[in-house]
Length: 416
Image (cartoon, rainbow, N blue to C red; front, top):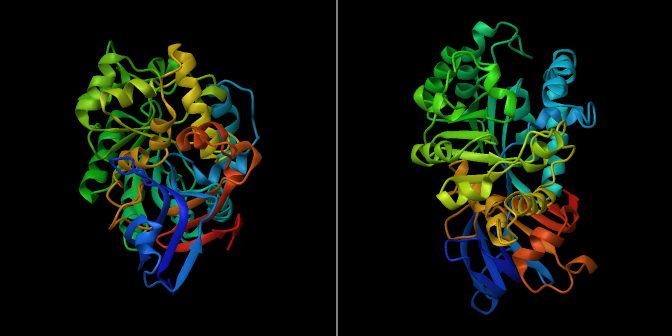
C-alpha cells in the first residue's frame, strides 16, 4: 500500500519550464502522483499518512539514465584500455556468446538497477538481449524503465537465428506492454554496421506499428563509416534519415561523429540523442557535440552506457564529466553550464525518451519520481548555486532517499 506522503522543509528544485526553486519547499504525493507543491507554509497541514522532513536536503526529480545496457554489469572491468573494435569484437562479443543467458541477464540487471537506485536514478532506458528476463529484474527492483529487445544481424543471446531477430523483437514488445505501468517496451537495433538496411527498416517499421521507441547506436566512432556498405558520400545520419529511421520516436545513442548538416537533420527529424561522455572518452571514440545539439533544440539526455565501457552507472559523475568535456572541447568555460547539465539528467532526458509528460520534473500531475540529496557533507558546503553543487560537487553517495511513483525504494542511503 502506498500512503499519501508530504515531503517538506527542503530546497525544492523543480526542473519545470520556469526552473522554479523554492527555498523551503514541500511536495504532496497522492496515489503515486504529485498532487501539489509549493512553500512548506502552504502545505504543512496537508492530509498525508506520512511526512518526510527534508531539512538539509535537496528535493529534486530522480535522474534519468538514457543508456545503461543493464546485463553488461557482469562485464565490469573485463576488457579495459582497448580500442572499441578490439574491445567489442575480441572481448565483448565472445563474452556475450558464452556468458549471457536468461539467468545471468536477470541477475546482473537486478544488480544494475540496485546500483542506479542507490545513485538517485529513477528511470533508465535499456536495450539488450534476453530482455524478457531483464524486464523481470526491472520489475522486481521497482525502477521506471524503457526496456528494448536487441536486434543484430548475427547470432545473439536468445536469438541464435538472425532471421528471427525482428520477430523476436515484436514478440517481446507484445508480451511486455501490459506487465507494469512503469515499464515500457522498445526495440533496439545495435548499429548501422551490424544491421543491414533491410533489418534497420524492418525494425523501425515494427517499432512504429507497435507504437514504441526505436533505439540505435549512431556515429559512435570515426571508423564507423568504413564499416557500413553502400554508404557512398552520405553521412551516417543522412543514410539513416533517407531510409526513414529518424523521427520523434527514435533515440540516437552516442552521435559523436556528426557535423552541422547532421545536427540540422536530427533537429528537423525530431529524434532524441543519448549522450554518453564517459564511455566515449574511455574508448577514445570522440566527443559528441552535445552543447551544440542542445543549443539547436535537439532533445539530449545523458547516459552512462554499460559497465563494460564505463565501469559504473553513476549519473552524478556523468554530469560532472559532461559539463567539463564540452568546455574543453569548445575552449569555452561557459559551454554546457551546470543548469543545462542537470536538465540533461532530468527533464531533457525524459524528453529524449518521450517521457517528459510523466517524469523528469516536479510538477502537478506527474509521477512522484523524486530523490533527496543530503547537503550536510563537507564537499557540498558552502552552496552558492544548487545546480553547480549538483554537477561539480555532489556524489551519488549523497543520495538519501529515492522514490518511484511514490514508492520509497531507498531510505537513508540504503535499499529497502
